[in-house]
Image 1 (cartoon, rainbow, N blue to C red):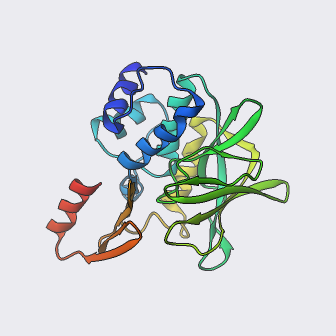
Image 2: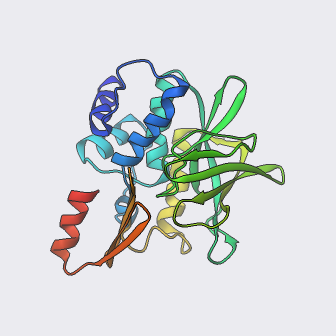
Image 3: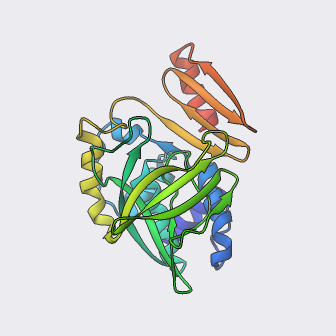
Length: 253
């Protein structure tokens, strides 16, 4: 996978040709967040490929595209694994804060559990703009980053990610729930992909959505509008034409 690593290093502008330590992870997670958008185009087109190196190569290098949680965290998982980290993919159920219900698609979010110095951390590069940009310990300690405050709280026999996003939340809200025992191998991600592509309750199989964090906030692009948060200021620009949508998609994501 050395050629893929080299290409990804160039795309995210991060030196993957050297050893990576735990202290380097915030910088790596920021590099992912600022250069690889959350992108549901493959969901809309119902693309299905085996979850292997060839898929990562085609998605992130050949097509210069990106993906949803199972694409982004599959890539991050492989990089961390190759660099010697003890990691596992884990499935989670997203909480719908607007309607105060758990997602009807079930545990279809994919994140990463990382073991370091006897402790377990949650790592995630695929939760849209809701990225901690840091490993979050399962101990409950609050982690601060440019995107907000994040912590892990117990929930029954499992855990839940809680977040207070800068400019968006007045208090901590729930992101998703997970069990540390519900880990996955890459090839098992295909079942989750099928649900996201086909389930009526999936939020990603109906209309185009791209989202990316920036050093000063984030951007979200739909077929209706470009929404930008910069230093706490929100700007919404309607999409005047298909040509403008295509231009913004290419230039900003």
